[in-house]
Amino acid sequence: MRIAKVIDEKKNNLDTYSKKYEPRGKRVRPLTTKQIEGSAKVFCQKFNIDDKFPDKFYDFIDELSSKLNVSIEIVDDDTWGFHVTNGHYDPSSFTIRLPERIVNQATQTKDKDLMSEALEVVFHELGHFTLAHTAVLHDAGDRPLNSQEDAEVQADVFAESVLFYIGLKSPQMEFDF
Ligand SMILES: [Zn+2]
Image (tube, rainbow, N blue to C red):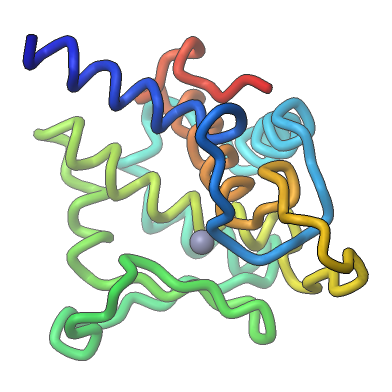
């Protein structure tokens, strides 16, 4: 059954924290899903992020730089080129760089799936900022990285939580561990 298989694969992807975990990012301070969800909630309250968010996207960018001193730079698609990622966060300058196409995709509301995908990129990068992914811990010896201390997994959980407040994710799609 093709459909059942697709659903199964999707479910596995969401279970990043448990069964099939493979390290993806740098080691950072461990955080539980609950802690990350808490940060996402505070963040959404601070910036009044709700289901009207996509219309407020550019105001949000201005607010980010005035309230948190983090800037979002929109990079021309040609300049971005074939960069492997859709977004980038530079912790040394508190700058998030996004290709123009992702910003356009995030603000067009006709296709919710495309919008959701782009907003996930935006809030993933903001997750790195909000969860203070600056220092990488080097004192863990040979102990393998676990999911709670993987910067990329944490940023994904943050993005999923924010998308819930925008009304683009349902609560049962949240991570559990
Ligand atoms: Zn990342």
